[in-house]
Length: 150
Length: 140
Image (cartoon, rainbow over all chains, first blue to last red; front, top):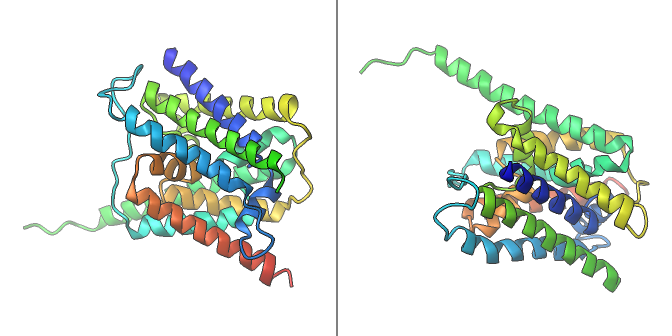
């Protein structure tokens, strides 16, 4: 219950932050990415502010042995910089440049009550499921190959 | 760039950073939105909390747009085709690369993760190149 309340508060802060910084304004995001055109550097302050806070606070938070309401920290375990990370990030960046939305602002923009963010979110979920489907296919195929006995 | 905008942009960013701090400090969780969406659509009971975060995103967004916003967010430059193509690539890419602007950007950089830094540099670079192509080359 306490964890649910924290999750809700965290979500509200996040949504409010995306609104106030105007990352839900697609034009502003595209202006920020348009560095060779009429560059709008405003969102640098948003990214700088957000990362500035986490760099300061995470050090202190992760210095604790456990979180306050949870038995452990759930941190990503992968550390390798591999083709999957770089290719995935590159594809995401292309999508971000086309849509003007990354996942957070795209979701929050649903509150604008227009159709376009809905198309973005539905398409995002579809893209994610397609990747998941491709990887399961690959796993199934590799399982069919008999493993050589030593 | 009016002063008003950078103050807003900075306050919004600080709120996002605080959001990620609260979630990690109390629940030990990373505030990555693509991870939230991917976990939420899995339907497993231990991933259900991610729906609560998404609900919070909507409440926060609506609170801004309908209570605090000095003027409504412009909705003039939307294009359904760009939304569909872009959304697909964002969904596919963030699932493949295990994160987006919030997971790798805000939280990964906060943890001083080199893997996340590589991801951030990659997606910033391809996003800028994409806008260069769509705004400068294709528009002419």
